[in-house]
Image (tube, rainbow, N blue to C red):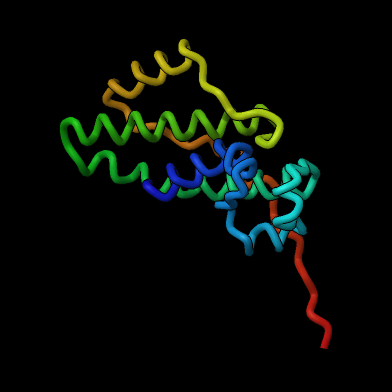
Length: 149
């Protein structure tokens, strides 16, 4: 779950990090999608970038899905904290999707009402669920490369 939260924060902050010359997106993934470091430094938001972020969102949802299995195994405050962090992270992923993965244009944002709703849900004794809608997007898989012999 920690990795899922970290990757979510990386995607949320990619615009600010790029402005400071910091790149936290996996370079291998960037190369696989045909998106270069120079593109990120120039804050070029094109189809390759959006597919890259869509891929990261889908992978991060899968990480959250795995991590959610921990919640029933812990008790008390830790269980509530895990629910709250999971709900918050998943809500940020939803916000990234609503931006059509355009996180270089605009930072994903959760309003006060949304945060209050998430806090109430986090206090409920229900394990959050991961939406399957973006998990298996066909347009977010990296292009295959052929090696010439």
